[in-house]
Amino acid sequence: MSGSGTKKVVEAAAKATKSIDWDGMAKLLVSEEARKEFVNLRRAFDDVNHTLQTKFSQEPEPIDWEYYRKGIGSRLVDMYKEAYEGIEIPKYVDTVTPEYKPKFDALLVELKEAEEKSVKESERLEKEIAEVQEMKKKISTMTADEYFEKHPELKKKFDDEIRNDYWGY
Image (cartoon, rainbow, N blue to C red; front, side, top):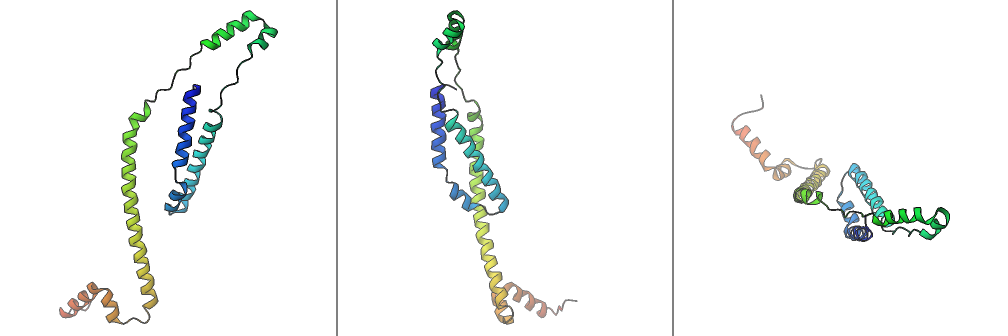
C-alpha cells in the first residue's frame, strides 16, 4: 500500500474503533456461547486494528544509497536505485464492497427486526416466568375461585363439561 493510502485505512480503522459500542453490544447477549463468540470477535477486531495501527502506519526507512555505493560500487547501486524508484505500487480499487454492501445492509435490517422480535419475546417470557413464580408461591393456599379468576377459559371449559354431563370417561 502507498503511504497516503495506508494512513487513510489506519484513520478509518481508528474512527471505527471509537464508534463501536462494545459494552452496549455485550449487554444484549443472553447465552454463554454468544458471550464467548463476542469475546473472540472483539479480540480478532483488536488484533487487526493493532496491526493496522502499527505495521501499516509506518513509513519505510529511506535507503542509504551512499553507504551501498562505497561497499558495492556505484554502477550496480545506481541500477538498483533506478529500479527501486521505478517501482509503482498500484492503488487498491475496492470492487468487493459495492457488490456486498446492499446484501450487508439488508442483513442489518433483518438483524434489527430479529433483535426487536427477540426483545419482545424475552419480555413476554419474563412476564410469564414472573406469573408462574407468583402462582407457585400461592398455589398451596389458593382456592378454586381464585385460580379460575386468573384462568377464565378453564372455568368455562369445566362449566361446559358439567353442563353437558361429561365427566371425563
